[in-house]
Amino acid sequence: MFSQRIQTQAEVGAAFRTALAGFDPARRPLILGHFDADGLSAVAILARAMERAGRPADLRITGKGENPWSPTLRQELEERAPGGLIVTDLGVREGDILPGVPVLLIDHHVPTGTPGTATVISGNGWVPEPTSSLLAYWCAQGLGDADDLLWLAAMGLIGDMADPDIPELAEAQTRYGKTALRDAVSLVNAPRRTASADAGPALALLLKCASPKELIKGDHPETALLRAAKAEVAAALDSAKRTPPKVRGQIAMIRFSSPCQIHPLVAQSWRGRLKDKIVLAVNTGYRPGWVHFAARTATGTDLIRFLAEHRPAGAGEEYGSGHVQATGGALRPADWNEFAARIGFPEEKVPE
View 1 (cartoon, rainbow, N blue to C red):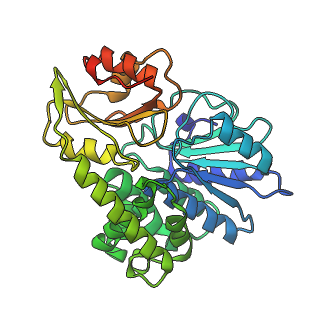
View 2: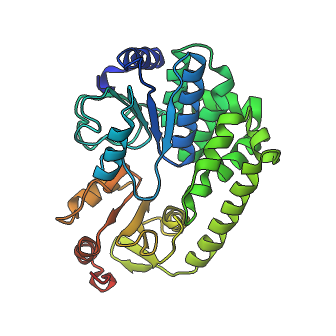
């Protein structure tokens, strides 16, 4: 089932029920999600809803550089042998993730291929666009009452889109408070940007808390871990933001080295100041053997297309997925050097 056939909220819930019906009831399903606020919230919503419906699931959050189409993660999934696999907020790409196992993708990013025989529930192309967490909330409603999980959907919406014009967000802000939701998103997003990229404490809070105010209050030990993570990221970001951009034509590049995932934050911070440029924040220290970068722009340029037009020969699935106005990628040194030369920055090569 592909996203084009799903046009309404009710159809999302129905598609979710149909997908679950195809899972092997003798084995626990596995929910695999991204480690940002949207992905974590989606995992928490699905896990809590399925637990209530008598279908408890195992959970797995991705770490640095992991994606479900990579051989290493695929091998782990094969060894787990789940009765079904739900993948959320990790994209829609070419090829089967886990052949022989029913797979459901819940996502809102621009698809880059057909994921084999997987069922796809996608918000891409909807106006307004539902994030993965909102899609998960609609899935949960397909299983029963999920009203108390609305705040989780709102956190994913805020984390990915700031303040979209979506009724569920407006309702959540009225019920739980706009400031509380934003503060909770800031905390939940922090661990995945740290050097360790361990989002486990954030997910634990989303699974146990009943509101954003409970999450940020500090009664749970995980909140202190999130605050420490936020301080670590803030220090790294403060250092990287002092790096001046290099500008060539329509492109502005800011290059630095940090083990923290701050390149999207750096790109976003310069986007407003360089409104007529494509901003590339390049991080050579995030993951050994890779150059990571984030692309943002206020020009209206389709960044997915821009990266496709400059794609180096060796680029893999880590390159050029996401949103048309917010994307990025990861390249091996040789491929980065080719890419940098193509966009007019040959001096920005790294050792191969």
